[in-house]
Image 1 (tube, rainbow, N blue to C red):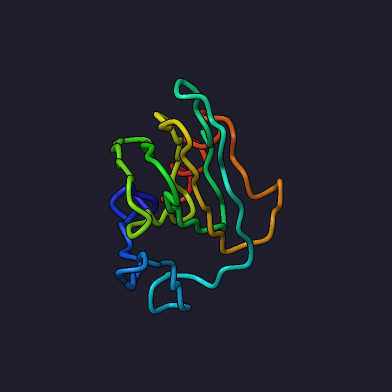
Image 2 (cartoon, rainbow, N blue to C red):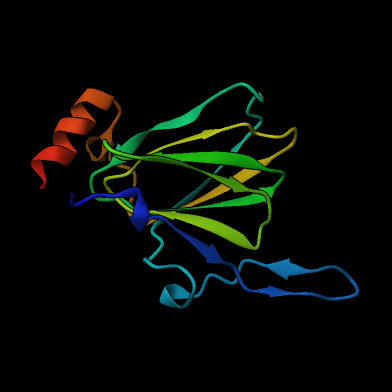
Length: 140
């Protein structure tokens, strides 16, 4: 299969600890982020029982980073699914195109930073699982 959840990867975000407080987020091109960032946005104020995402992209790569709090990311392809728990701003999840992803279980006050390889394009989104499954299976 061309698209597989095995192509998702955890990315370590460099940090600089200090007695005055740590900092991180030095996403320097391909050294940390596996794609050029063209867009970013934040997801926040999500009720604990809500589900975000629930779609795949045709072209866009994403890197999800828990800036504050924690949440889980369910990544799926037609054959497998896996849950990644994200709870530190020093570790993000890279989701390449062709992977169905949903974000769930947001802790109170959590903030997710999303770095994207493409500008927003509604045509890049696949929001229906049946359409997604046909798209992925036709790519084989």
